[in-house]
Image (cartoon, rainbow, N blue to C red):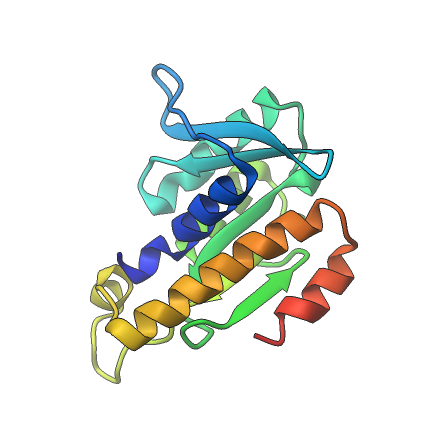
Amino acid sequence: MTRHNAGFMAVDELCAKAAISLKKPWLRSYKLGEGRWEGRRLCAAKPLTFMNRSGEVVPRILSRFSLGPENLLVLCDTMDLPPGALRLKMRGSSAGQKGLKSIISFLGTEDFMRIYIGVGRPAPGADVISHVLGEPGAPEAAAIARAAALAAQAALKLLVSAPEGVMNEINTH
């Protein structure tokens, strides 16, 4: 597991809880699945592109399920939070996260929810790319795994609860 896999870890947790199986459609660069949670429709996906090109697939996925950006929740890593911290944001810029930058570019809007999973910053003078693509030590990996599980729970709560309540709950972690 690398720090950069935090969002995918959260999607895996969400799919396990909701009994969703992700499958890759023929000639598509993403995996997706659909299920239900407490009577609500839930679609989950993972882009298979390079992270900085993940926005390429988001419009196709939304279109396939007849959804708009207001229905989108992106689960992603961020170096702006310590390992294991979470933040739900209703909208906003990419904050330097290249995957979000790509999604914003392809959707033409910043108006979608995202849950950031903290992976921390590299040590002073260390390479950012090596940090993000590197494997964290055991305590840090455990904190990120716990945060991914909490992010999955928050995503499920968003299906049945007001975003502000979920935000108040997870933004304290």
